[in-house]
Image (cartoon, rainbow, N blue to C red; front, side, top):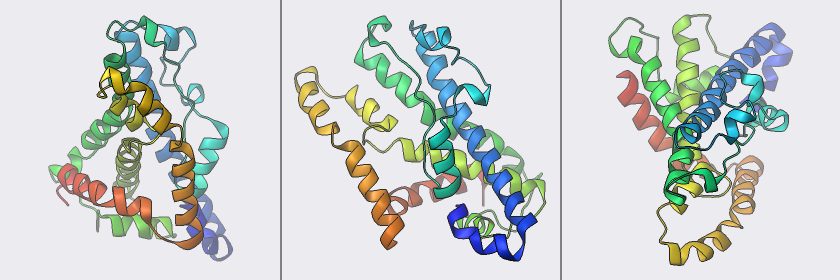
Length: 233
């Protein structure tokens, strides 16, 4: 993300800050949709905890975690403020917990496909709507066109949705998988997931320090496929 664009700060400061604003807008939009959907599904399934705590809202300030937001802006990964869920208020226990968990990623994917309609039907035709184009935008080649801004929002929603489906704690995918694990294996699965945060941080650090590209190797093909399916490009 912006870590790859620091050279732009010296060459074109206004371009760097414009890039930062656009990336922040795209990320905040994606996180807000994501966390609101967790709260909405939890409330619908009988758990009013999120609503009582003001999380059933499209106000970004209700959902942003300061550290997670900075990490997303700078490094391209991060987190929002977790939506509180009380499984005791959900009628179907782990099954409903899995539905609440999957609601965040699915909402990001659905939102991206909705935003992509102008591209799909030909109302907007960017010079290139591809991951290569997005990478170019990240390093300072962002145009002022509405199509490029929209493409950036689409990309980050797809990225956040797919990333959160990885079945490692604390990502949503771990809770989705927990809802599918038979009850007799639940304790063993929970013990296994205790190592999830360390594994995830380790992968991110390896990618950052050594450029292994492990995370992008896992989610990149999925994001590419969804980009093509959503936009037709």
